[in-house]
Image (cartoon, rainbow, N blue to C red; front, top):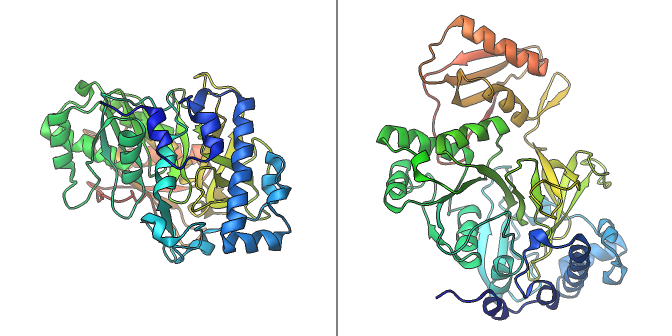
Length: 443
């Protein structure tokens, strides 16, 4: 027998603002905008007050910025608070705590994909459970009792696997298959055996691992569309719309993007309209700022994504500079969700600079994946000199023979789409990995 939502929420040391707005289990993705804004302001005030009173780190930052909790009177005042950067967190696991270290029950670490010392995030039971047992997005994330969820994300050195595990099991009371991804036991072969034996109706994984599973299914004679999947979520890697369409065809279901981070948790959930991420506004506030000046940008302007987590009271994350690029959109969505949307444009760190132009690897991927002759594995080899050409190293689709004519055709299509020069190198097989797919190689 499942424990009622209200009973589980009462078991937490729930902040009063959460109890006032979510004690009845109201879905956050259908909350009227005016009510949502009131909740966000109350939560922001409570968060800033706690950070100022119980964190020497935050108190000093606010004093230097000449601002205190009493100055937060409206949501627009958020921009007056100082930024939090990755460098401030590196190698300092306890720096954000507003509680005693003995209250910490979990520490998670960054995967180190952007270099430098590790970033740690420490959680108390209250912060850990509050994230899943209070605001929920029942229309954007249609999961519940009776659903069987294959969780094919890493559990080690990553927040992804464990975060979805507790969300499915604790937050939505569904059944979880902790398949993992690419570890010592979580091979594609073992994962496909669990799929065959347990018949999940939901899958969450990364785009490249979805392709790896589909390749194993083809070798094993398993028809993925015959599973009758209700939905997939893709996360953990950048993914173009054209690549996502390939995944959907292979699995015979809708695949939606899910965006989050170690520092901030869940940030965005895509709906079936596939027109941007719906911002998890009951969990976070998002700003878009100029990457160089830090000045907030207008709606529709592309800049760096800055996030304030509204449900982390014991380890507050206030105005965190994610390093990701995107823009906000507040126009109504056809799906009926009241959550604002944002559109990702990749990581600032991953943007490619070539011949005076900033290139998004996802835009290059989109153009390449529209070509049916090209297989699902590829790399963009960036030259060390602007006088050279970008090389695309790729596999070909099954049954397509390599030829100089085909290479010239693909290069021509890419040049037409991007106004940049390309060389094409066909290979029989690129390396598969249980980690993040390597799409960009620098000479």
